[in-house]
Image (cartoon, helix red, strand yellow):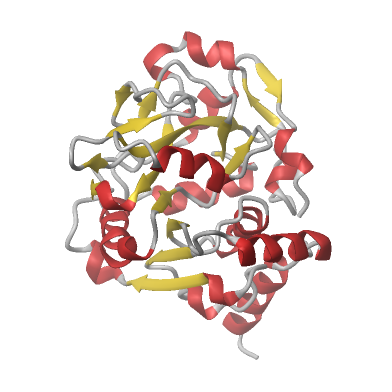
Length: 308
């Protein structure tokens, strides 16, 4: 076995380190089999060289959020993400699309993610009622006894609505220097909501990511919210129009839904993230880490209840 093959094998071992609870698997499979509309919701994931992050993300959203289709829009990963074997969920739930350096060369710095979102919508919008556009360091939480399908079907009936936007909960490093086995179990320290709100336009939790009615997706004009067609509007968890829009929703509320954003993770992982970001427009450095870790924090263990 070559050094590259050994490294590849080691990454596979890390990805499968957290086993799936057989009961959770059985319940999720039963729910998926009873869906009124199979593949009602899909997720589009623009991703580069984050194979080790995929396992927990996919397991969470497949088994706990009951997402049954994931489009992996592979942005120049080396090796391509499709070459790995174990992602913790059935391979049949994954669709891989690889885009090499020649695609990025045609776009301005920082625009590859937007292009991948547009490409995903173009290819797959006819297969689903809703498609969500989130990253593998973002995890959806439902805070009520509803399912994601319940929430989306309620909004589907409202012809004004073209998009559901979910506010971030921003997690920080919790003092960890190296990658832990689980983000949800380990990063239980968040930016204090009052401190974040006091920062006004510099606050981070005002950011959203979106789940979009595919019939009304027009174009990804930011990585947070697309433009919509036919006069439809983006709404938050309360059904009210999102303001000010583009990437933000204020006031921040998370009574029904939250999007937990593990933005820094450990110092080791943040260094890896800076390396991936280095060619992007507005790439972040240590000053962003320092800003997020400055001031009051709060204990945020909500996601630790999910296992696996």
